[in-house]
Figure: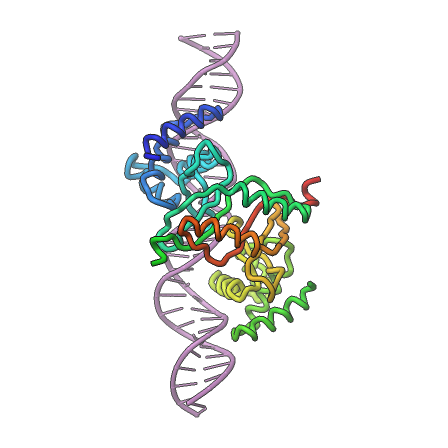
Length: 144
Length: 144
DNA sequence: TCTTAAATGTTACTATATAACAACACCATT
DNA sequence: AATGGTGTTGTTATATAGTAACATTTAAGA
């Protein structure tokens, strides 16, 4: 999906959820989209400062939190970063493959795999929450 | 496994790997064992300072890194913390269930699930590295 | 004993994230 | 239009997490 298409889909999704994709949030989303792969909060902050002259960490973190909450971005804990959700509006649980060499990501559908894991965990009395599954490795290009 | 038993197993495992479980590393391991569930590096640092009067962050991080490397602890990225490996010496890939309510963890065998995921990823040309699978949810006690 | 590699100590710093409160914008009702 | 509530953004300060670089000590072998 191209960037304009993604923004349009994001708009729609926010409308459906009854939340507002404000100018600031849209700008942050565009900054994330401008990168390939994983983006760091402080990278976004620097970009935002270039575009608007001044911005503080909470500004960026609030926008990123909102976008994650809205299902437009995923947080990649292992890398302290964020990636664009490549399945906006369709799936809610992703299997996110992060290449440790180039940082690019590849998002697959994880629901089937998670269902299995959910059963396995349920056998121990543990209720797995809705979430993304993050795995690291090497992408085709970086394996050589 | 009780704490003494774990330390003994840790000793053995380090010997087999040809690495040294020094006094400092053992002390850090004991401090982690003294907690239930997820422990933070700076919590260990504070504990260490209580016991030895003075210690700096690198001291703790180096010991924790060593223990993770040796397979005695797992790092829980999502929580910036560490947990004791509950399968020392047997499995190398764990399915780690973290209760978001109480912080306690439950570690299962993840190899079968990861094999499936590995195949799914391989179909996209992506080679998943060896790793633990971390999932959050609610444990039996916290579900009520 | 001497040498060397690994481990630890120490200082300083960088990176990541949040708390707390102030100011503002929107919009719903009066 | 004025009022008041809610959500958003701005601002300052600080908390938390992690590492770089180099000095010193320890342990194991030549």
